[in-house]
Length: 290
Image (cartoon, rainbow, N blue to C red):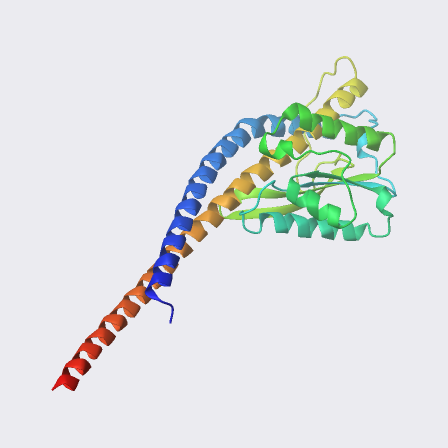
């Protein structure tokens, strides 16, 4: 059995750890609230603009050429994967890495030079590097300080590569925030973009007056929708990260509390045993003197 000094040391150590995890939980909960506010302020605009484009595509009778929706054989692909820069957030990063590896497996017939990776977050960047895939740029800062203009540059680069046929598809992998305890891993096709109304939904009946012309509207609106979609995925992932870390730190704090109770019980038993042994020694010594 461990000595009383060792048990006291463990109690002090676990108590200190519990203070740290509790503080980290509070910090993550605060960041989560800010991330949720950012999504709440941003999503209505993104959804409305996307709906306008979908309604227009569904209602117009004009023959529309939409380069971003062109489907072709995939000979070169780009993969955007969003993780966190730090750890202590449960399975958040491992889920993204696992799903990214599943996506990569679908393109294992392609040579590494034909797979472009755009990791946003150190954890997924390190995992891709272990797979022999190196990102052309460092986008890790965007995970801690998301900037729409910088994310728009990434989207514009991918759009340009797709339109000029330097890549044939773009995959997007990230964690979707459902609540603080649940994050849903998403692996979706970013490009080519969907140019049709999903099955089961009604086509819009609105009649649009186009100025100056249809081609100009599509050329302006479609890239903007794609920029918004990527930024939305980043904000979603950031909220999911803070939710996952809040939950992980709450579980760690609760486990630390349970462990402290067990150690205190163990300490009290050991102390009681030590006192009992001392009493027995005293009684035994007294008996020997008779």
